[in-house]
Image 1 (spheres, rainbow, N blue to C red):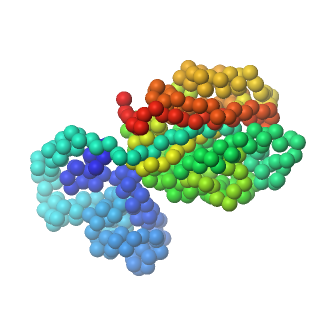
Image 2 (image 1 turned 180 degrees about the vertical axis):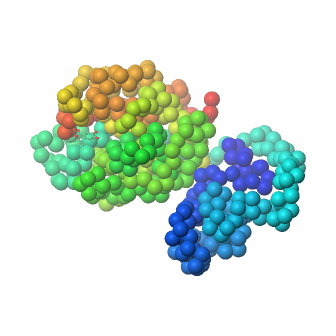
Image 3 (image 1 turned 90 degrees about the vertical axis):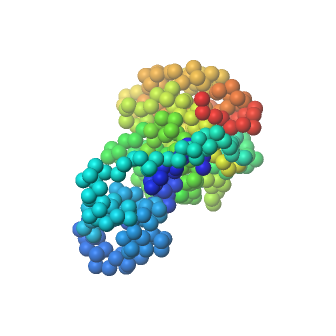
Length: 435
Ligand SMILES: O=C(O)c1ccc(O)c(O)c1
């Protein structure tokens, strides 16, 4: 067992983590369906038929038909979701909890009235815990970050590709700036891209404004942004690596929102099109990572940079030999609103690129106000580049980065296009470890 999952040693207890959540996804969603009177009536009319209409494993259906909550929990059920099922059948929380203990309802109730179950005799076997700490076997192999890609994600670039305008004089210089990048990607195909972007009021409206969202699902359909979904391949996720990253980042105090279902807009699909071209299928899995830069307060550059550092520890502690690229997207200078719309600041943008390469820790100290004043209201997207930069091994002195490509062009629609590829060359074979 990995040392950070020692909660598995607590006897008689199943901690509901990402692993359990993935196992019980449909079971728990089935439970949620019982939150309407109509669905409860349908369930009670024919339990088997209702269960058969859900993509559940037979073990999950049988657990419910047998009223075996231990089996349901083992199968990934979470008690707060199962409570909806219990309420449908008329069970209280006390009846449900008691049913898992091997006691009769009366015995369990009496135990609770008598002060509840004692923790004595119900603790972890500390000899096993100490043995786990004494021998923290490092994984024989681990994922590596091979590089970082930084690029603007202007929707008009996607439209130019989708409508075959890339050879037009307006667009040709933009796409020429990515010719090297496509070749580089062909020679350095990653297994997974961890793609930092912002959703633009597509998946998230004002009913939910999470700061950081990690896509933990298996697939991410293309969003319809008002002109129909872009005709690009769907995005395949990596739920297992994403769950590992979630676990590691939350343990490093980055309180994420996890999305098992998420549509992805131009912020994510345009960088994929730019880097991989017009393809039938993206050549790798993609883990989307959304950062709120739409409604203030938005995270600082410093917070994004620290998140990138934690992301490297997360990726490099994953025990599979995957090649992972981290992409930071959005920017460069642009302002899409108000009398100052059309603002472009070549000097500031190019200084940003210089500092991103040479001294990212110093660049991370730049306050929001400077981004907005110098790079325009939407130029704030550039804080996301600091996540990808923070994930490079030179940041903590354990490796070096090599600039493979740099490109800058004005304009693409209202925006300055900036692009950088950094290869990551960690010195040691050892993965980054927690400080
Ligand atoms: O320049 C533009 O047209 C434009 C529009 C929307 C965006 O999200 C963006 O980054 C640029």
